[in-house]
Image (tube, rainbow, N blue to C red; front, side, top):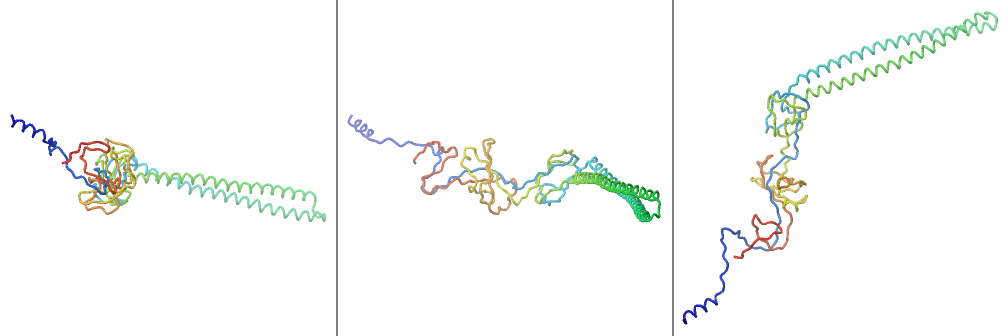
Amino acid sequence: MAAVGLITLGLSRLKPAAPTVDMAVVWPDTVKRGPMVRQVRGLGTLVPEDIRWIPATTQGRVESITLRPGTPVRADSVILELTNPQVTQAAQDADLQLKAEEANLRNMRVQLQNDYLQQKAAAQTIESDYAQAKMQLDMNEALAKDKLVSDLVLRQSKVRADELNSRREIEQTRLKATQDTMQTRLAVQESKVDQTRALVTLRRNEMAALKVRAGFAGVLQLVPVERGAQVQPGEKLARVADPSRLKAELKIAETQAKDIQIGQSAEIDTRNGTVKGKVMRIDPSVINGTRTVDVSLDSELPKGAVPDLSVDGTIELERLPDVLFMGRPAFGQEQSTVTLFKI
């Protein structure tokens, strides 16, 4: 009985054992003190800052594709060619119409010039006749003072001079009207020529658009049509980008994106090196639980950095100078509570 009592007394004085935990289900880390950087991470891709989609400006059929994606292009590089018999015929008709209108303008100039010269000659003839009649009238008036001519002759010369003066004024009016009419008719015909010339320019541009060009220097990224395909105006035919100017598009979880601001520092990992950058745009909408954040890259890209390359991005939210901190498990969220074990 004494032995049993001693054992019971000893057990009662033992301290309770510390709780145990399975190391396979915990995430161990050490509490540290010092500066801490708050960051958010996200996956994304490199995309060109300058991208141009080249649309079809006219209906047509893809006759040939001369360049394939990945080919460097200049502004005048022909990517593909379309055919459209209606566009070709319309351009030819416009050229013929312009030639006809220009011929009409030349003929009208000649005809109106002849009409003007005839009217001018008639006016000058009347002017000469009037001058002679006026001289005769002046002479008869002088002679009449000396009674050397009869009153009848004097009146006849006066009537003749007055008649020619009236005709002279009428012919001068006709000459002015002929000149004004000539200018008006020429202006109308010149307007027709200008309209037809504008139509020719339009048709020629439509013809030229059958050869689809890059529009600016870069790299051809995509040609979503095939030979023989029928395309409509506005349909996308090719995509050209400038590969020397890339940005990172990161997908950040909506719960972590609320503290991101324009201008914050970021680091992009291309798997072949890292490059610094800054947040330049934050998509205001949430798509599939993420927001798109654009990061401009400040330095030269590592080798192998090409459009659509998958990258990892880290955005620095703030730097805290003196705090206690430790790592958190992936499921731990801001302002939430998780169980900690001191081991």
